[in-house]
Length: 341
Image (cartoon, rainbow, N blue to C red; front, side, top):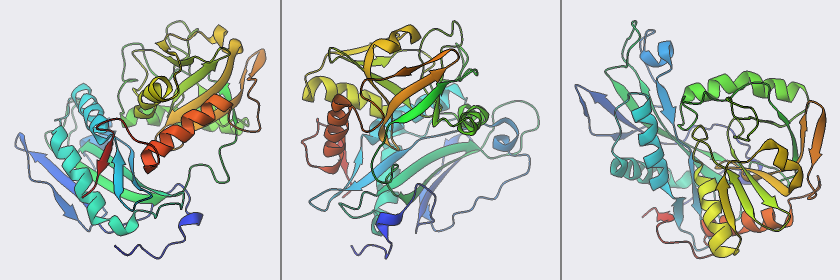
């Protein structure tokens, strides 16, 4: 397969139209057969449910070219399962999980020329999403939905390597105690836009959100889970019913235990503990791990011993091991790598 004539090394993290997208429609109580389409625009009523009441959810995953030339996806079954959970919470019809994986495979195959070559540092970002499309003026779920997948080539999240970032503790709450924090709903990201722009205006890269009930425990950022390394080498991640179950974080937990031999703790993490940790990072699909060097908050700051120059040593091993698995350097646990035939 001849690749597109693109300067892969100069790609940013943005949208670029590719050859094909995937679309399936739900109407009259059932999903119609999905198909690949060349059209990348959507026509809908001004009164569409998604525009009035934000009934929409999405996922994010990537396709990679491995060293031996195969195109692979990383754990798409977990994306299918998480999207099903999001749909159920938002009263949307679940797109069957097996069909979800088939659709991912079909759209990646159709855009194989857009999957960046091995060694370029770039990947093909895959965005499945669903929304209520028919007109709804009273507050209720839609009757018709579209499930779509778009793909776009993206460059590495960090140009020139991942340098530790400085974050701040947000005065806003990310999610309600019994709200939608544990699903990938578009509305979660809409409410995070003002806090992240405020953080940027004040010179910070990201927000740390605390639990809304007591504001004493660490939750997540607007788009990534936290991970910490203790001074005695334990891998710790916050546990909460209002945290999105990050696929990267769940994978890192296994990497930490099975590949690096670390003790793994998935538990409530109190803000007061942070000063005692050696390393901190944000984990998610886009960057895999973003190292954190400093956390600022009213009345002080926390400077991690790993510093502001580079990833901490344990974080770096975790990053190199997980990306090595994704790119085919390191043998993956069974079922983690989906080869696109």
